[in-house]
Length: 366
Image (cartoon, rainbow, N blue to C red):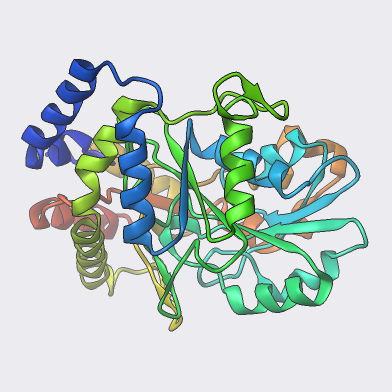
């Protein structure tokens, strides 16, 4: 049996007509850059998400960079973020000229340890980027309290957490601004790179839209120097075709996760994902933890099961950040877990026989 880590074609077959028509319409209208399909998606995403503004951009990395720049983060500033994330979260801080400051993870939910943030705040700190990792929300109330106390901005990195909830509120609606990736494998994925920014701040939304479009809201009227980061028409149309299904897909992911937890409940030496009382986890990834990680990974892959490690090296221990002098002891939980975490197949269409097969493989190693 073959069980892919993610099966994007399985999703396509369920909405093939809608996707094909969306692509055909964009080509027929030659609406490749900007235009009605982008505007339609932005409006629909903002409405479904419950925010005033959605700004489509080229990818999730640009979304973070634009948000940082428009919050006036720059040289001499520091931005606090979590040690365990994809490098987009931290490299965009460096791209502004600011310094990333890393905080260890909370041991149960893998998100930033809010009890260790305040000790990292200095008079140079400008913002905090909590990452809603794997689909589980960060603990936002303590972060909000700190940002109010120290007058800091909050950029929510929601790349893995579309429509996740914190105390009944959707992640991305809690801080000053939020960013999303629509990379193909995300819970809401395009067929190429794509991303967006959401905010309820009118002025901030206008600044982001202007900066992402060469510094102009109207062609040839460039009031600032900007960048070229635009959501293209094809990706917008594809996302718009998928958007009506995202809440059902979210529940399907949660059902898959619940089934995994039942199948693996009695597996020895395996720690399963947890969901905090304040959270609605959307399971972009289903991440187990085991001291037998490498054995499990090798066995599953030998038997046709796709796996991945998110992430094999904590951000501050990457060569890219060697100048800051972080050691494993500075981030003990993230460092320890990086040797134990394993992402197993997770997607809405994953069938029960496949889950049995994956779970049985894990049991054989434990």
